[in-house]
Image (cartoon, rainbow, N blue to C red; front, side, top):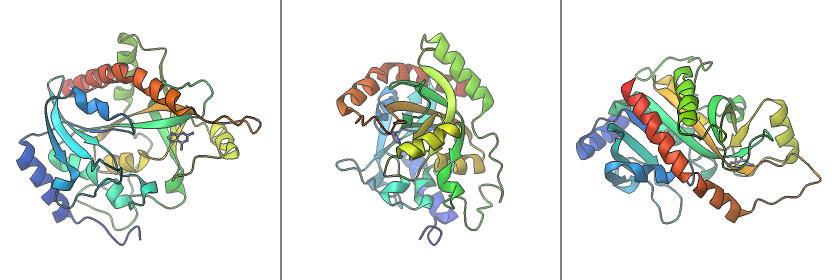
Length: 287
Ligand code: 6GU
């Protein structure tokens, strides 16, 4: 049941009104944290944590021990709301639950979506710990029918046939690459194409080779549904992948990702990532 259920506009308004009353804030940027990237929320000044379980009509996160939370606060004096723990399609959530937070961001008054994910690299140039600023995407899940915008159009939010040729704002991408350079991280930042699979199984070697031939740089199981719904309702989008695994393009190689190495690489990028997000949000606040 993907299109049987949906949030009514009234339900979404109720969620947004609850969050407005509780936070007394009007965030300018909505930030979605990828797996292991929740430390972005730790950088907020005067954080207010609202657990998903406290929010009417909000789904629960399936990750054990964490219901997930929205954190309101300031980054570089810009009011933001951070989503710690997203809803993945592979967990069994329907697309209308996966993407609901973007419409909430819109109703809260956000102009921007900053979205991040942990991803595998397909382009052999990219190593664990590299950060890929999303230039474009290939949405395999949508090409095979699971588009979050399928079903009656929600005219309160946007048009029936939204274009997707400019999902990742060019000014933000340029600013992102400039800021990475100014921070001294140009050797770890690239612009690239992200592909989303439904998951939860990883890509096979043949699939990885297909992705490479299709021009894919990084691959994961998230982000694009949220981006499509954000673009539909007029949010300006900026996205990054953090490479936490290197995709396997060789049948002869049976490399198993070393989880400790992956964690160490992600941890090593925590400081650069925090600096980068802080600077990007400052740029968004001044735009
Ligand atoms: Cl779909 N593939 C690989 N290789 N690594 C990942 C991933 C996918 N999603 C997160 N990390």
